[in-house]
Each structure stands twice: as structure tokens, then as C-alpha cells.
Image (tube, rainbow over all chains, first blue to last red; front, side, top):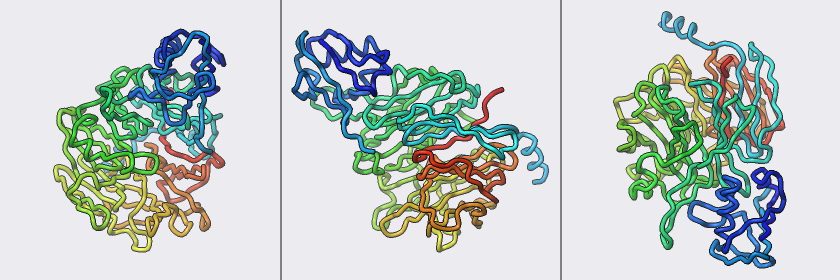
Length: 86
Length: 389
């Protein structure tokens, strides 16, 4: 699948805005990203496996905050930094 | 007394001072010349990141840690081993235990406080977080684990309360203090939950709240009602601590466990409410505070728009106003608990960072002040550092 990386996280991905990753669920995809880019996951997912309050994740055009959400190889995942004020 | 003063003066460092500045929008350093008269501001580091605290390791005077989050992203710790030229992220930042599904677990929102461990424990650090948690690293900040039992202890969790019980951006574990004579003797404070002490390296902790007042109408025997803002230990007499609390200024002389409200001796029109407190490095009778308006709805700004530090030269029996050079009017800023610091020079340099992004410095122990930086983002913390040569 393709994961769109927001600018706030591109310091982890060698400044790539899109990366390809494998995984059957959102959680496994983020774990795969973290294995490739250490530290990436904890900035957007808490130690209790919850998406952080100002992070929104969309699979194609559907928002999901569940790490167990299934994802297919052709899906596009968008990580969005949202609403943190001035 | 004179002999002590002469010895102390000989031990004082000299030369350039570097202020390590954490702000709501990044980190900066401000480096003085050898006389501390002129200052040079660095470009921003981690621009846009919330930098809660930045510390130089006094044991090697090269390693630095920085507690960072952003408006969107979770917390982390950055580490530099070359005096801030390059930084690497911690591979395991402070995090609470993952609880089984269905249970309610805590998540670190930000790392708030960093303290190097004892001089005999190189590469070891403590960190305090929001929500309140105590963590330790034994590899220079690369990985962190919970320190002691308190992050999981039912009694401590009750005293810590919930995120609703603390300061607006979350209750904070702060003022982690290591007794320079004994690495197993540790103090810490919680903005919701009082001051605590261990003498056995964290196997047991106990509250240290006798004599501290709480908000009117509440029971001071209830630990959770206590709101210490800043606790400092006197290096020249480690049996003496000072504290700026939500409810006054206090001193504690061990082995007593009874805090004494020395803020009652402040001028009545000023009161004894504030966030930061600083103690003299070589004279345990000398301490500084920066009072704020704690009336009515708690404006938490300089009283009357006229900022001033206050100093005691006699352990809190009397206080003197120190405002020469500070704005005479219309300065409605606040100094947060980590945003007042000192160097070790003689005379001691004092540094204040404001919520309006100014840094005021005194190289005369507060007798006169000058603005040495302005237009910075809101300042969260200042530490005065002397790097190794």
C-alpha cells in the first residue's frame, strides 16, 4: 500500500512524502513503518495503541482511528496532522 | 563566615555562560562573552517543536538532552553528544506500561523535566512527565524505563489524580532533585500531588508535605491537594530546600520534615505566589523568587504590570525587591517554573525568561537587570550552562 507522510514526519522518512509498505492492518503497516523508520510510530500512536489526539488517519477516503482496520495492497493511507492551534 | 565566602568565591566558575532556552516553538541558545555583558542568540533548533526542557550534562559538559513534542506529534527526547551540534532521537522515550485491552492505561503527553543523576552515575538521567510519571535512563537518554513503582502504584495514582486535576496543559512531575551526597536520596514534586522523597533509591517513597498549605477549604493532610510549583535544594547545604508553592514560599531544614512558610515575610501587597525559585550556589541563606498575581481569577502576570524579583539574604526572614532595569510599568508577563535560572559565577548571574519571549539577565545577583533577548516564542525553560572547553 501507499502511505502519505505529512511534512511533520518526513524527517523520519528521508523526506519522502509517500512510502510503500506492507501489512494487513493499519497497526501492522505502522509497525512496518516504524521498523524502517525507528521512532515514527510513537509520535502518532500512544503506548496504549491509540492514535494521538491531533492525528487523523484515512484509508482511501474513510477516516479510521482503529489500528485493527484492515488494509489491502492497493489502498492508500493518509496520515494527517490536524487541529493543534496557533 | 568571611573565610567561607572567600573559599566559595575561589570555587566559582568564570567565563562565558550559555543559556539553554526551551520555548513553545523551538530551542535556542544565548551565549555571553566572558564578562556576561553581551549575548549572541543562536538560530532556532527544532523550530516549531515544543521544547519543554533542555539540559547540559554537568558531568561531561558536552552531552545534552532535550524534551520535545509538537502540537501534533507525541513526546520524545533528543540527545546530543557534541554540545548541541547534532542531535539523535531516543530510541525508547519515556512511556507508561501498555495495559491489557479493556483496562485504562496512561499515555505520556510530554516529557517536562530532565535531571542528571548523581555525579557517580555517569550517563544516568531522570525524567518527569505529564501526566505525572517518573522515568530513568542509564544510557545517556537513549532508552528510558519507569523508575521505581510509583507510575503503577494505586496510592500514587490516587494522589496524582487525572489529567483534569492538574495544570491546564496537564499535571507535571517536576523538581527531580538528587542529593549530591547520596545517589539513593531523591526528591520530586508533582503539580498535583505534593513533594516526595526516597532514601533507598526508589524502593520506597513518602510524601513530604507537613507545613504546606493548600487552597482554602481543603484538607492539607490530603496529598493530592498539594501543588508545589518549584522545589530547589541548596548545593552549599543539601539539608536545606526551598519551595515556591501554589500556596506560598517555604523552606525545609532536614532532618525536620516540617516546611516553614517564609513567604509570610514578603510584603503584603506582593504576596508569596509565583512559579519559579532559585537558590544561591554557595550561600544557603540566599534565594530568589519572581512573584505573580495570584488574586481573584489568578491572572498569573507581574503584579500591577511591574515585574520584580525578590531576594532573601537570611533564609526567608526578610525579602528585598529587585527591579532595577526591569520595566517600570505595563509589563504583563509571566515567568514559568522552569524559566528562571542562575549560573555559578561570582557574583551569581540570574536569568528570567518570559511568556512574551524576552530574556532578562542580571550579572549582579538581581541588583540590576537588562533585556538580552526579545521577540522569542513563549519561553518555557532556561538553564544556565557552562560547556567544557
